[in-house]
Length: 200
Ligand SMILES: CC(C)(COP(=O)(O)OP(=O)(O)OC[C@H]1O[C@@H](n2cnc3c(N)ncnc32)[C@H](O)[C@@H]1O)[C@@H](O)C(=O)NCCC(=O)NCCS
Ligand SMILES: Nc1ncnc2c1ncn2[C@@H]1O[C@H](COP(=O)(O)OP(=O)(O)OP(=O)(O)O)[C@@H](O)[C@H]1O
Image (tube, rainbow, N blue to C red):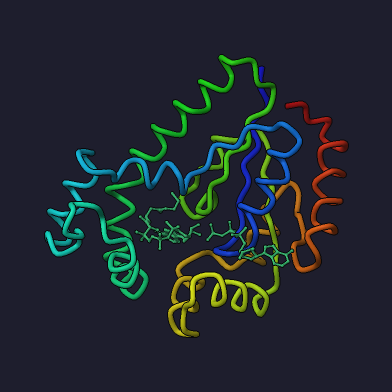
């Protein structure tokens, strides 16, 4: 039986950074954000459903989804964000299950599911244990603004569309504090691998 860990956090809290640290040690990551990009590629059913809901102006000239535009719509309108989730999430879960199965078939003993909305979407049944990557609100806002070149308002609207990170910490089996340096985060990842006896 493979061990399935659910890795989550808030937007820009450091999930990808922590995923890379696990990958460096040979672990397989199944990333919900990558699956969510895959299922809206041209020709995919979810993309047609998005066009039906949001209009064809949501596409760029070459038929590719205009992610910036869709983001600016859904993160300021909760109803529209829920509609997008209802279109995309079933396809994302299916894709992730497929990748998880492939990894297990290939002999992996642990699969790490990186799912930003693990708690919001009640997906904890997908994992044996949960890990939350935590940063304080100020650091989260700063890192998000810097990485995405967002204004304060754009960054805040994305943060507040998610469950508060402090609440996620309460729900987690393990917490990685990513307020410090990457080296300090790396030490915590190593400690967790030892504590949970995780094997790639
Ligand atoms: C709205 C979209 C087009 C914006 O794309 P963009 O390239 O700017 O952002 P990206 O996909 O890289 O997401 C960045 C982060 O935003 C947060 N986020 C994304 N979607 C959502 C959402 N529906 N609700 C809350 N937070 C979200 C996550 O923390 C994610 O890691 C895109 O995020 C999307 O299609 N979202 C719906 C699918 C989804 O819920 N994805 C999250 C994992 S399943
Ligand atoms: N310990 C750290 N010190 C300094 N910067 C960091 C640290 N950890 C992450 N960052 C930076 O913060 C930003 C967010 O990190 P990352 O992309 O890993 O977050 P994420 O949780 O995967 O984000 P998203 O929810 O958008 O997918 C990135 O620009 C990253 O380089």
